[in-house]
Length: 121
Image (cartoon, rainbow, N blue to C red; front, side, top):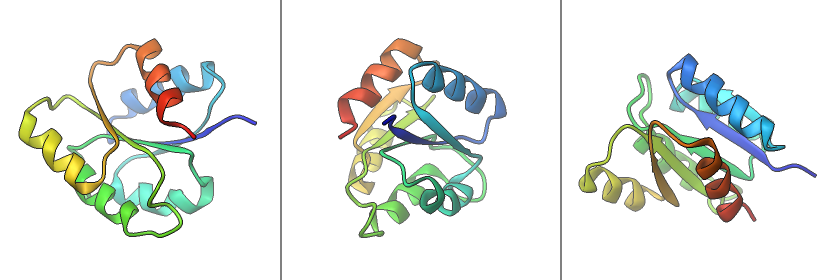
């Protein structure tokens, strides 16, 4: 059975790149355009791994991660941050919110797939 991934990013281009990279590797992918949309889709797709951007309208990645970690049924799901941000303070804040790992955009599809496989249970 393939792993289910929820990818949250406000960029349509980035969402499509994520969909292509992850489905090509055999994952089932659900896309969301911001943190609020991501929270709505969490229960639909029951993800094995969540990938989220940080800088998004409506609800940013930090708030999204905090909300996911408050859900008992999903608080152990790995969350990878995929962001253009690389400042150590942003990484620390994401880790404190509950992020599992950090990948800087633009991403290498093979490295993204390897990271997802590494954290997927």
